[in-house]
Length: 140
View (cartoon, helix red, strand yellow):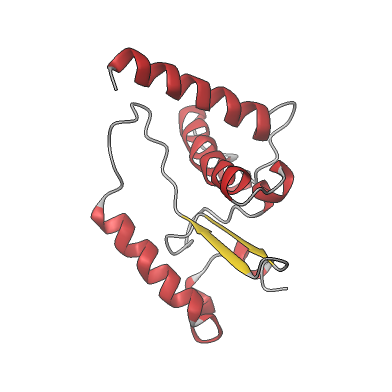
């Protein structure tokens, strides 16, 4: 993919993320970024919206449902979103990273954290302290 084509696709995806999860109001929890710089807020929003977008597309989740599935934040244990679909008996786990140029891949350490987070999630009753408060709402 050439650079111009890549930029087009990134811009198109950014517009979709904003339309689905950021307009007319942001529907993804960004409360932990209230005091951060604007560029940090934007990067975090895009990364979280990308996680929600993955669930919207792959799990056929409504945008509001996908947005509520986002657990990204401090102490997320590498898991940025999780969604359990009872009818399908399917648990979706997402690790996302917004990369503006679209050319990099996740770092090995990030993938290792995600793998460890999945292990901890499978042993949640013994390891719940390794997850942030957003996971508590998912226990029900």
